[in-house]
Image (tube, rainbow, N blue to C red; front, side, top):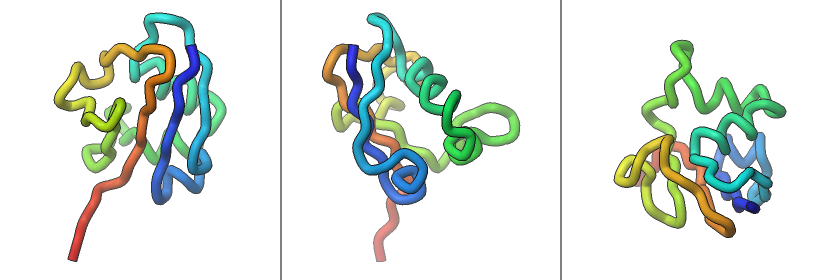
Length: 92
């Protein structure tokens, strides 16, 4: 299945604005991140802290919904889903 990736700010510098990743059926957000970080080591340090946890300021969204309101990293993906990777958003 093909998953579209949208990235913003420092994540865009690493991944580009829009990209696509092919994953096996039944993959989850965790699998997507593993696939992305396996070839992009800068992404791994940008996403994960020293203990291997997603940095608290990273926002991950599936089809415009924060995965924290779904099943977190265990959120299942389907053909054509869009996953966005964002830094914290601040206004002022």
